[in-house]
Structures are given as structure tokens and as C-alpha cells.
Amino acid sequence: MARRTYKKEYKQKLVKRMLPPENYSITELSDETGISKSTLSTWKSKAKKGKVLRDTGRPINKLSEEEKFMVVVETYSLSEIELSKYCRKNGYFVEDVKKWKTNCISANSLKKIDVTKNKKLKKDLKKLVFGLNRVVK
Image 1 (cartoon, rainbow, N blue to C red):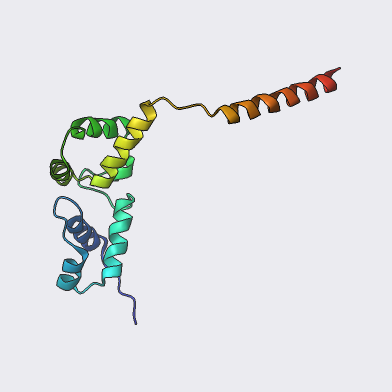
Image 2: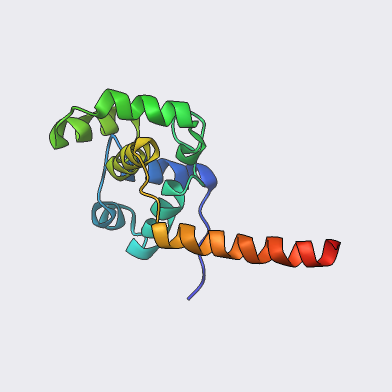
């Protein structure tokens, strides 16, 4: 079977329809356009990884940490339905916003120090210092 090529603009137009705010399903677009579901799925996954630009002209993975934090602040108290609406309106993925929220929380939480790891590091340090003292003398 011959491999078909599609113009970049056409691909972007279809990908845009699969992403927020339109969120057309791959099945619907496949039936409408005649393009295989696997091809559309590949285009969509590449778009999610930032290989296709959003309306803002930047890949979603190129948002600064400050921008991601501001999205988390804006959406922190929203319900699941409200979060979905917000993401559709602004061109984000709910999964990404949830991941950013988790990252913000974990970055600001106190980390428990692993005592056994700490003891091992102290022991290794003693061995290194002992070895250095032997070499220096």
C-alpha cells in the first residue's frame, strides 16, 4: 500500500480539532476524513509532546515554570468539570494540569530523610577520609 503524505497545514488543522477546545474523537475524524485511526492517533500524541504548536504559537511543554504554577493556582479549587472547561478554554490538557499540581505540591513538601541512606553516606565518607589521610601522610 502506498504511503500518503499530507500537507503540514492540513495535519495541524486536524490535530487542532482533536485537541481542546474542540476535542473531536479520533474515530469521528477518521470516519469523516478517511485517514486511519492510527495515523490520527500518532499526530495527536506528537502534538501532546509539543511537536505541533498550539494557538499560542508555542508548544505546551515550553511553558515556563511560572506559567505552569499560575495555571495550578488558578485551577486549584476547581471541580473536575470546571477544570475540564478551563482546560478546553485555554488549550491545556487536564492530565498536564494535574501533573503540574502534583509537582508543585511535592516541590513544597518536606522530604523525609532516609536514615539508613544517611548512615551509609557517613560510613562511605569516613572510608574516603581515612584513605585520603593515608595517601597524604
